[in-house]
Length: 524
Image (cartoon, rainbow, N blue to C red; front, top):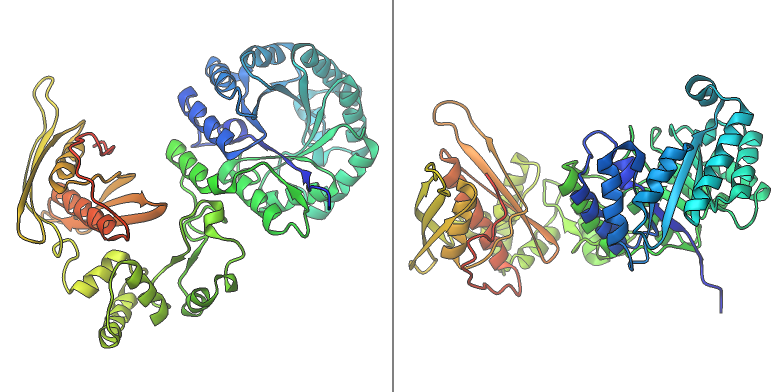
């Protein structure tokens, strides 16, 4: 029996290095929510913040430290090589089951001269005193040499040897400014591994200024790193850090080159990425590896045909492995009959050969006019009219804004089902759209968990049309719907109905009547 692959520790710094990047700031409650998600994902260490930087950061670390007890995930706080920083970190970590203090000092000539004004001997002395101080307070200490890549290799060896002797268990080699290359960092790690005590764990922390953070982290592993510091979605200072999801999947897919394992539950990668996006508001680019909307999307007719025959033709991993529900056939001007027919079948339509041929001709005409043909477009092509009108229709609605003191906005809705029967609903909420969706929930007799709601103008002038767009997830698949009207609230109701119909058409969906008037979380 072959031995089990060696373990690579995943050190997530989304809450520290990632959170300090512009647009990614989180409060203590948000940090706690995301830290729990990271523990569920299976990261080994969560760097929860920089305790000495503010009372808010210290409070966030303390809350995370207490919450992660029993999860198997350690909690870390960053500290400069200063007694006050180290003591603040240790205090914030008092409730942690596996606390780690992470001390750092700059070591490169640029930083020694222009930032610290220290000699080499002073840097080594400060590092040793900091590690010894931290070890008196906690058992697990990590030491980082800031700007390590631009530090003289022989001096880097010297400071790491001194830190290890003082009690640091993990020695981190940060590419602070994203300057290195894979060949260079692998050679440096091989040199350090040969020069340092075998029990010391070498760690890599790579920034993405040249787009090489993940490649450099993998090269560092090849050179001897057994911990990698990374972030979800690659967030971080400037161009960001090594993306956790890319690193982990590279190790898994190319285990022939990197025969190592992690403790990550890869099926949680997409949900964790989505959670971070919701918390920070920082969207992930569509073509982002692993977690981007296009990561498992195929539009080319040749690719789609190959995928329908055998998915390995154009996919090197399964979307389900990382948390997507399925591969997505993006329908557009390059799509062929096979992909269109497959999508129609998924939507619940069964057409004979002649009808399918006529529909494909209309599809091609439509695809020339717009970049992407959505499910709603296909439904409209099949039904020959507006998809929502073919199902449930909005016949009347009334809204009150709740302008009086203590009054909530309220809505009353009248719908007509496909058989012509009327349905009525009332609802209230924190805003008119919230009240409108609550009334629709009661009238339609089903719950739609709206994840995002957006409105924008599609024309100009006094009678300008507004478009409302909604998004939800159903059994892991992203569903969207939009509608237009000169009344944006009417457009919102029509979009909600279209989204509800799309859910109802999915195989195996059972409409569960509900009178939960607070079911929609949209606020307006």
